[in-house]
Image (cartoon, rainbow over all chains, first blue to last red):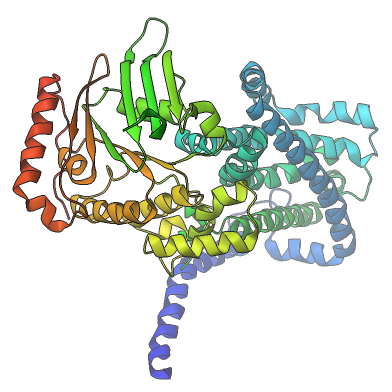
Length: 270
Length: 268
């Protein structure tokens, strides 16, 4: 048993190494470029400070940055939950009453092309500059369209025979949605949620740029730059990035748990 | 056969798609008795799948009357009087094999233990024991189609509608599935209406073969199949089998059905 298991474990280790080795090497090269090569090329500090200075600035300001990150993340999360739920609900309504859907869809697509962050100063006027709601709303609007469009596609791209089968069971629409359309839409929904998680963070940070509680991460980036504290600004950007990546990873993990049956997931499973 | 024993009675069924469009079915008269195995055969566009869907109340006829179990087709569908199997298995990818089979029972409100018992019986009937926890993608095409058959039989409908269920399978698998279908049919004793464009499949399976022709879709002849039951591998080598295959082929040609698709080549 153990003699059999040994080469198996080795095989797995070498496979992991092959998979993650290149990733680690690229990461190392990136770090080295940032830390040593760019300063050696004479890139000025205000353009891009060396990594070690950024890390030091993070360490010195860690409590403000992490608190700011938490505030901005809460704005992003609020917008994500709000925008995605409204989008999912709207998609259900539009898929259930198709004439309504086809009447509204061109406007949805047109609205999707509007640069939504352009509304950020307006939402401040609506909800007050210091209110987190102005940021939540921007994040929510950014999340809304990709989730709406993808969910609607998932709800409606059901094979005709699947629907005929449900019709042969004399299943009412409620059951067709619960048993066929919604499960069928989930891969589309999760693709959209992954996009939305990133957009929500962008929306919240950009919302901060137009004013907000001085503690919020986006506000800290703006004020650090205006005070020429570029290392701190970069540290705040790193914090925002890590929050964004973490948010995305959580959604991706949820996808993996929910969609165990789906080809895109099982392709990644060994 | 007395008329009140009929599972399906079609009188003067016509179906036109679109305004002044294609006549998919014209003046279809058909009576299917209890326990029969009827094949509908014909070239593409002869309306055989449409006729099956009219019987299942999935397509509404333009004119004519259709009775299933002595009721309107609509009433029969609401009463879940038939099970249906399509060319593709149409399994729900997010459900395990057992849950796919149990789906109609769930919709009909059977409790968990009844469902589990029935699924066990059906898994045995279609010889898929041990695959209950598998997902559809883990099964071969033939196994998926067996799941679809089990699902259609789960609520013991009096009528089984099959729309080219083995059309996507290779010849070897198809012949094995034919034998299995006949075994299941003899065990459960329900009536089967089976759409195919394989002449040998129709002759091998059926008690009667209904030959259709296209443009407009109509029934040109009905060939009774007097091969002895139960049918076995040897049936396909019987001289009578070849006579009947020839008879059906000639009926197809007489109906102007030179466009019958060639049977799939054996690739396995």
